[in-house]
Figure 1 (cartoon, rainbow, N blue to C red):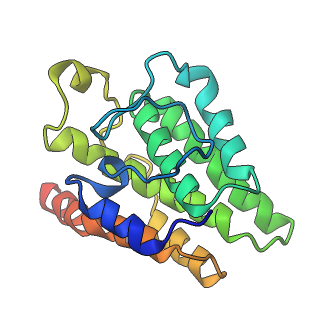
Figure 2: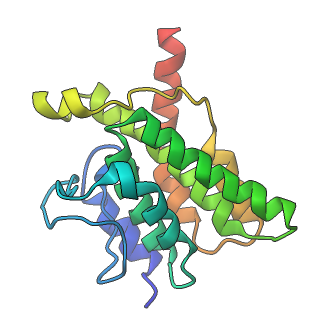
Length: 193
């Protein structure tokens, strides 16, 4: 079942905060990372062992032929929230997503999804820092939230644009979510320097 673009945008507008993190995407019963049913943005399952499973579980979901764009976006949102507790885990998953791009290019495969996945995850990690900066965490959560800046210096927006140029369908919705906070982030970074 395809999720209409209008529905995704309407659902996204209902919640405030960095959209790639704070706006869950409705995926019905589709397979994604473990999550608890909550009314807020963070339904991370405390029983899920992200340290040992996150990278491979995320890749398995993204590589499944049945993974629609909404499933990809929600999976990466959840992955970024789990990875926010470990810079090493965030870097590991980013590296694996970038390796998928390199593998596709080396094999001569035109696959907009691998470009999208890498770019969307990088931009989701960018928005992870807004949760910390704008005091959206309890004191206990703040202590656990380790990803606090764009140390990798990567630009996922251009990768998403490339995916769209390659024929990726419906990715304009993602670009709207990316751009919503990106400009504010770049201005803030420039003012701190």
